[in-house]
Image (cartoon, rainbow, N blue to C red; front, side, top):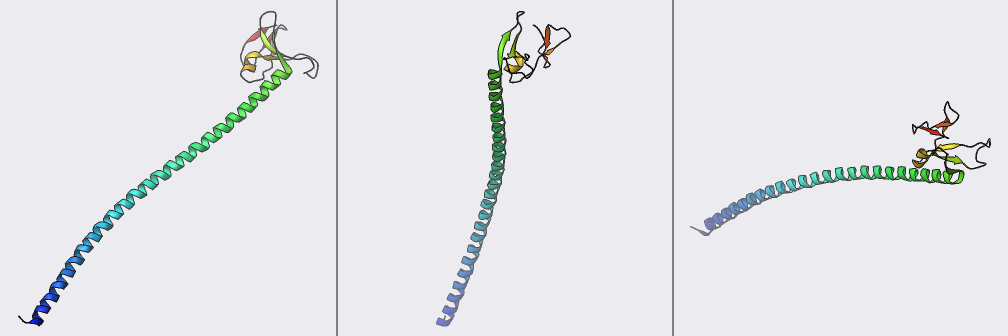
Length: 149
């Protein structure tokens, strides 16, 4: 074999090796690309799950904020109610044992006396007791019964 033939065979061998290495690299690149796509899909699914969790948490926060505002309004209303009762009414027990809240002198416009249901007052309501068919009985419109006076 002559030198030119040996060089030609050597060049052919180098080309074969380059092609083999290129094919091997292409396979590795395909495997790496496939693994990358799989990880990308996993991360994308995790992002979707996190987005849903964030949305749920935001809704819960909004709901809790609204609930807190409602409770603050209710506390303010109850404080005003308590102040109104303390300033304008006093607990009173009739001779028959019925307990009510009656207006303090000078509270009503006509100078009369107003009576509030004690059960309603304790629940944060201001319910005026109304006379029934008998002049000696007052009735709670909220269903707390009749009171003898």
